[in-house]
Every structure is written in structure tokens, then in C-alpha cells.
Image (cartoon, rainbow, N blue to C red; front, side, top):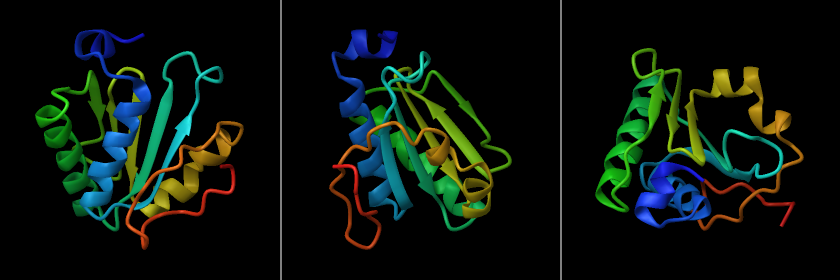
Length: 135
């Protein structure tokens, strides 16, 4: 359990869902949340999102950071990639959000690497939602 969750009494799943909502509100593309509990020892959930450009990945990052700071009052423990804007990682302890441009996301295919992980069913804007075959 991360220090973040202990201090805010919020579950990793709630954090993952809130991050997905914030990304959706900012028009993130192909938002996916995976439950990696039991598969990874460094996080419970991953959230993946694409931005249409490096400018949008930065805007998505900013929206998550500010939205999480405002409600539920959390800051990331660590961030990477803000300058390059091609792959920005926000680490919220039990939840790691990956915001990538499509080319980087396609190259690394992290969702395929973690294909054994169940996908959270998210309520997103219809145009941005991905079919959830696992649910």
C-alpha cells in the first residue's frame, strides 16, 4: 500500500478511475486501465492514454496533475517525460499513468506486455472508449 493511499484513504482503483475521467475530459484517446495486482510488484493499476500530439500529451499531463491535486488532493510521487512530451509517466504510488503519442504507444505496446491483466470497465465518452472484451 502506498503512502498516498494511506494518507487519503482512497483505493488504487478509485485513483485509476479518476485519472481516466480526467484524461477523458481532456479528450485523451484510447484510454485503458489495467488491474496489474498480482502481476506487478510496483503498482496495482496502469492507466494508458494517447495524445494526438506532444502538445496534447502535455495538456493531458497537466489536466491529470491539476485534477488529482484538486480532487482527491493527491500529487504524483514521481513524473518523467514532461520535457520531451512523447511519453509522460505520472506515478501515484499504486497507480501509474502513461500518456503517450500514438507512435510511442504503438512501438512499446505496453498493453500487450500486460495482456494477462484484467481491464477495468470505464465509463468514457463514446468516441474515446475502447470495447472491453475482457469484462
